[in-house]
Image (tube, rainbow over all chains, first blue to last red; front, side, top):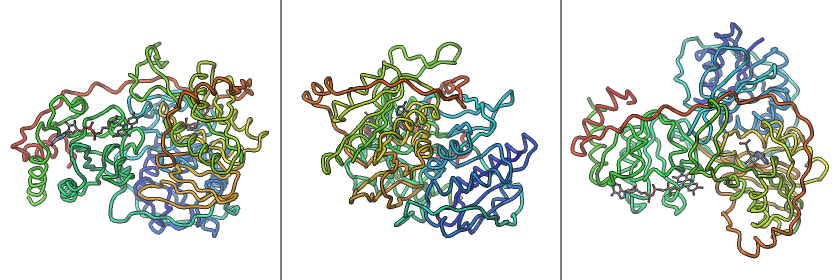
Length: 319
Length: 245
Ligand SMILES: Cc1cc2nc3c(=O)[nH]c(=O)nc-3n(C[C@H](O)[C@H](O)[C@H](O)COP(=O)(O)OP(=O)(O)OC[C@H]3O[C@@H](n4cnc5c(N)ncnc54)[C@H](O)[C@@H]3O)c2cc1C
Ligand SMILES: Nc1ncnc2c1ncn2[C@@H]1O[C@H](COP(=O)(O)O)[C@@H](O)[C@H]1O
């Protein structure tokens, strides 16, 4: 038996979600005394680094048909590799790619699926894994009763460590069916860490009054090296791009630090951010509901206090 | 074209979450149920828009008990032509199997679902339906345009967007951006009462996953207020106490 991790690399490189999944797989393998095998499909320039995150072996399938992402084609290839290496646990990242694959793969492998797990399984009979449910308002413990299990790992759920060394990548061949989905373009913003992967997030809401005031948010984010986010009304009115919208209907994130500025803390907003490790709230209203979910709070006018906070971070970074 | 829209019933977004029976069961006393927002606002409305533009039929499907009928009727009030409820409940694979089983005999051009249910946040069912029917699948669609049988879809990927082309039939899960929420009007509500809602018995499917228990996060400690005149102190706390910078 082995643990197979699909390490995604749609942009040509393995990124944080892939490293996290491999790290999770290697911890799982350690626990069960098996091997952690990482699989990359198509281009993956930095695949050897997967060894550093604990992969005992890195396999690669390359083929013309893997250039466009078609969940059916990828599923078919991963399923063949599962069989070749005799894996009983398959780990994916809980990203849009992972979500396109997890359900398909579980059907193909006749495997139980738990998506969005955030911890290593507990000991005991059968495989029991934990994941956030009800938009982060609670956790569920799921028991998988089938022989093969597919798990997808929530982003930022565990801190990875590099413990291994660069791996040599072995190439593998499988059948690769022709894709039915034709990808026309893939635009990934460079330079900025995508929100789901971000460890530091600076977020602002309607308290900002006007989109032209966002320079103070951007400066703060710049100094910190943080990614910016916003509340829903702010993106709905076009003050900020829609991909910044966090919450129930937007993106769910779990950074180490979430700084919420001029956001009231409505339950639908909290649903997407309350798994953050540390929450700082800046609001002029001491009764704002967000303070109940915060670790640190500053009751003040944001226009006064945000520039001061930026200065303090600058000093800290310089020291 | 024929459109199938998968609609789920979920607790209202503001519902207080608690558990009973030793944390083994969700306690729904006092909980208001709604149609899963992604299904109602985006999947259903986009299907209706396509029907309005090019003709066809919009069928709603739900897997669940009779208590789901109110939510299904709301979908009919918003504009669905008819609905079918598969009278059973189970894990994601069970639900997907029932939907696929119904769909395979009914030749739908597009099967719509929401990107995820806001109760168990799985994002599991739509991909399973696609696999069971051997159809292409587009997840997290934020835009869908049809030109004959070819769809151009924009979907969210980590930190960006992807634009892809796919021919019918296919399965798509809808996210914010695909359409604008519609509020049912009086006429819609009246008409919904007369629209067919068929109840079909489920096929037997063995569960592969069960929920063994739930837990609530530990209560949050009281917020620590920091003097607005002393942001150095906040930075110090984040560095030394919280250790996040
Ligand atoms: C089904 C559903 C889904 C939803 N999904 C989401 C979601 O995903 N994400 C989301 O964010 N919302 C969502 N909402 C909306 C949510 O309920 C709130 O309306 C929204 O989050 C409020 O945004 P806000 O906090 O920016 O604005 P407001 O509620 O208007 O709050 C502004 C805050 O700024 C403070 N403020 C004002 N001026 C200053 C100043 N000068 N200095 C300091 N503080 C100041 C005010 O005290 C106030 O607390 C959803 C709602 C529904 C019904
Ligand atoms: N019981 C159900 N009946 C009909 N559709 C469902 C059901 N459960 C989930 N779905 C559909 O699948 C989508 C994703 O759900 P999930 O996999 O539960 O996150 C939902 O947005 C619905 O469109």
